[in-house]
Structure formats: C-alpha cells, structure tokens
Image 1: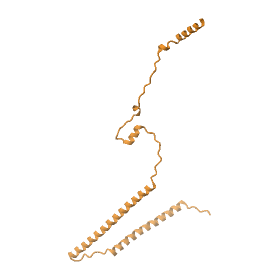
Image 2 (image 1 turned 180 degrees about the vertical axis):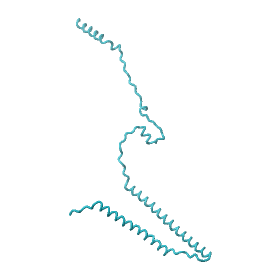
Image 3 (image 1 turned 30 degrees about the vertical axis):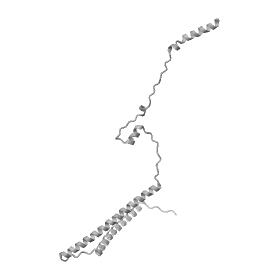
Length: 171
C-alpha cells in the first residue's frame, strides 16, 4: 500500500496545535507545583505563635536558630560528600584514560629551517639565529699553476720533433 503524503500546510497546522497543547500543559504543571509547594509548607511549617511575653519569644528565636544551625551543618555535610564524590569520579576517569592508553597521532613531516625550529622551541622572546653555513669549515680551491715554460709554445715542440725525425733519417 502506498501512503499518502501530508501537505505541508496540514503538517504546520498540526505542529502548531501540538505546541499549543504542550504550552498549556507546561503552564498547568507550573501551577500544580506552586500549589503543591504551598500545601507542603502549610502542612510542615506552621506559622509560629507570636503571642506571649518576651521570654517565650526569646525561646522561640533560640529554637529557630538551633534548627537553622542544624540544617546548615547538614547542607555543609551534603556539599562535602558531593565534592568528594566528584573528586573520586575525576580520579576514576583519569584511571580509565590511563588504562586505555593515549593514542599518539601520526606525526607529519614538516620542513622547517633551523631558525624557525629554534624560535618554536625557545619562543619568540629569545632571538637566536643559527647560520649553519657559517660554522662549516671553509675550503679554498687550489688552482694548479702549470709552468708555462714547461709547456712552451706548441710550434716549438713540433719543430723539435721534426728535427729528431731528421736525425733518424740521416743516420
């Protein structure tokens, strides 16, 4: 069976109806909470009897202060327990991470000059320039000077060889 699709205007209308109903339900919930709170306060917290002389009012104030101190101590104890539980949870989280082990990301090959590497390591406060080429041993090329006298003129060498050839021929 093929299902018929709902028109967008119908869908928008239904959505607005649902939102209206949810809004009225939230308002009713707020009113119910307020009424419940008032009923609880009326039941448990009766209004104090303020009729009487000064001594009875002083005794009433002392009792109220004692109750306030007791509630304050309970609140402090509960807060301390919560802080301790939070600390234990953090410690356990750290232990879980330690047990799993930290995955190290794959390192990428980065081309960096020596100066920029030193700046990254030492920070921008330290100005260190490292010219590696200046530390290298300098080697000068030695130019071999061939004696021009030994080589001489090439025509002269040919003439000398020609004279030798004649010596062998005449003998």
